[in-house]
Image (tube, rainbow, N blue to C red):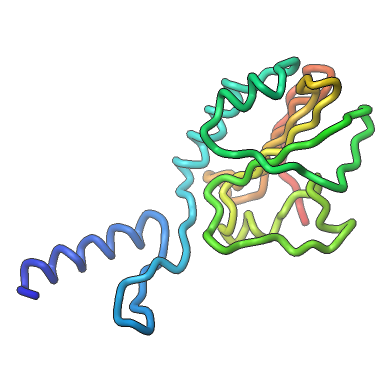
Length: 167
């Protein structure tokens, strides 16, 4: 490797680390990405996208058509709204991160506060369905301005709220 190649690689590593992750040499002396987290801008962009696309009353098929990401079925939900099914999306998730299945404290409707604070997840979308229609959704994320965990909720009555939450 000549000095120009080494300089390009070094600059690339520094740029990547500055915006979103860590790179190190693994056991085989190759570069490996050990974590990837979202920047505040990326989370804001995702929030704006989700809020602009999601509308109460959309069908499951309509919501699936809006996103390239695959939803996961959410379990152990605790809806008071008569919901009959639940979905979740985890955005900017660090590869290999899986939430501890410690019910009921870590049920899918409960915010994964530690993962958000520790940048293992950039944003968490939770949706409730009734008769194949979206009746409620929430987005948990870290506010890039104050680095506090926030919860945006579009309630079943069409009222939106966005407030800080604590563990």
